[in-house]
Image (tube, rainbow, N blue to C red; front, side):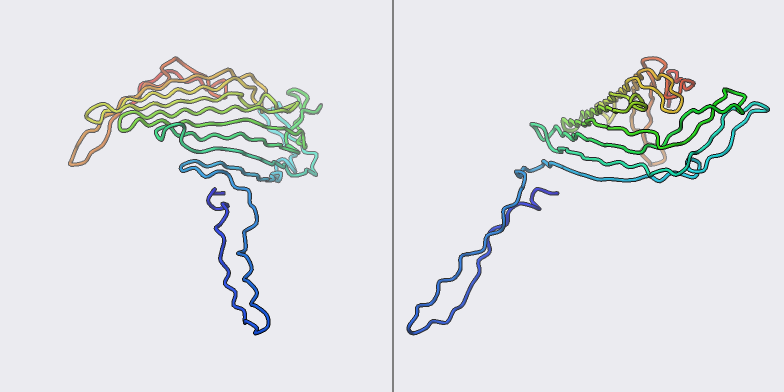
Amino acid sequence: LRPDAIAPQPPRAIMVITAASPTRPAAPPPPARQPPPRAAPPRAPGRTLRLSIASATRNPVPIEEQANQSFSAGPVFDQVLLSSGGFAPERIRTADLGYVGDLCTPATWLDTRIFYRPVRDLIAYYNIPFPADNYDGKAQDFRNRDSADIDGAEFQLNYNSGFRTHLTINYAYLNISSPTVGASGPHHNFSALIVHRLPNRVDLSAAFYFTSHMWGLDTGTYIGAQRRLDLKISAPFTALSRTARVGITLQSALGSYQDFKYVNVFEPAVLL
């Protein structure tokens, strides 16, 4: 809601015409009608307080509801999928409280919020005994496995000094309370981007990314913290009466880093 959309309105004058009686004076007009009291946040230019509440459901997909198959490699079963069926839809509710506006100076802009999201009837698989599987003697049985309570906070800070320097900082904190999926999300995510313009429209930029450790939801494997730094310089040029830009990027300047899957390791690279 916009603050000005719920601010009290000025009173409206009501004109009443009465007929005078020779033996009785005319009644005075009734007082002007006042609007009922309403809750309204204080109005401030360039600042907004936000509150949102929502809910959603997710129905099971066919493989979760009717799984009865195996994936094999030659004569050995690699994975057997089963389903108990009769699922309830996954349910999520969310409540967010946020603020958007300048911070002390119009050159600094803040977008922040806190949130709470209870998730119920999560559909996931259990490993159950299955002697016919020659690989590990187990099958994956889909069920309404668990519930989770998710809370956290996010903010983005933008600083623009004018023409030459721009800074953007993002941070997110996430906490998942659940006996089975509680460690499946990183507690901390951080990124920062700074861009500075030199004479002749030459741009220098640096971007840093950080994600704290977590445990993979599907495999349960440990995924360590990730850090990455990219550096870039770009400049305009003119060719065939058209202006374009060319840039050189040093990707992963801090060294190699691992993605969310352990086999995905990215080495430093220079890109044009």
